[in-house]
Length: 104
Image (cartoon, rainbow, N blue to C red; front, side):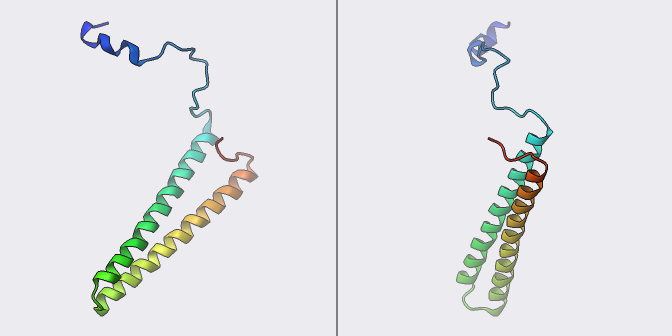
């Protein structure tokens, strides 16, 4: 090993490589992780859209165009929440029918 990188020798443990480190094992685990991440991102974006619509409504000063934009943003934020909740429900039902379940 190059002496310049000798200090990195302790960064990698010398443990048993057969020990389960919590990594993914199969395609079902990868699908579960992907679905969970997509749903979390959906909920997050919908929450941000709702918060943004409230800020637009407050800072709009009663301007009808600004209020209309805020209502539209609120509508899309609520639709995003409903779609994310529906996706979570579909994931739950679909994965349970396939016997995948959620990650433990």
